Picture 1: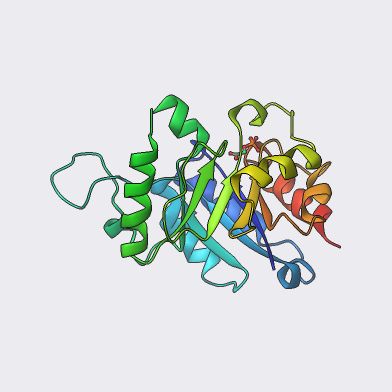
Picture 2: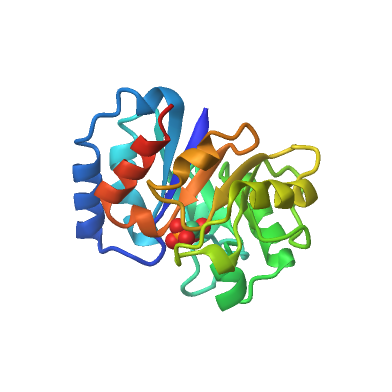
Length: 219
Ligand code: PGA
């Protein structure tokens, strides 16, 4: 089973999320549901809306895009792993946008991963190079570099496989790729035995684009 993850980033009102889910789920999933697990990483305020729909489909799950490095407590504005307990199955952690724009460190990532695990949330650890350390008990890693995100400059498969050699030489992890994946290139990645799935950012903001992307990955 391979994974296709939508990362909406900082997009959508609750109403827009509802509409996205409504239109998206009107598509034909008869082949898709046997080949892929579809995960929607949506912003915090839309998680409940997305979950109400994903709960109706065994091949779909909901993920957070981030969670706090702090425990539940007097931390105004934070969303903690404990608060997300029972709401999300997965969380992206240490996305390259968070590392570069919000200065998240490997220590933050390790702390977040630990808190996620404590509350039954599977961390998807985002790494750019082998220098981004992978916390213990990690199952999923998402390889993505800022230079190929949101700009149409997706990495060729051979380059990804070279990076995989240094990041995950023993193929210990469920290895995902992210960076300008869309319907024109997803097949290349999903067709590789070394890659277990992809994260789709820009091409997931519109539900038609996302469905077209998943469709193009079908064998
Ligand atoms: P993108 O985002 O598809 O817009 O490049 C990918 C990601 O967030 O990993």
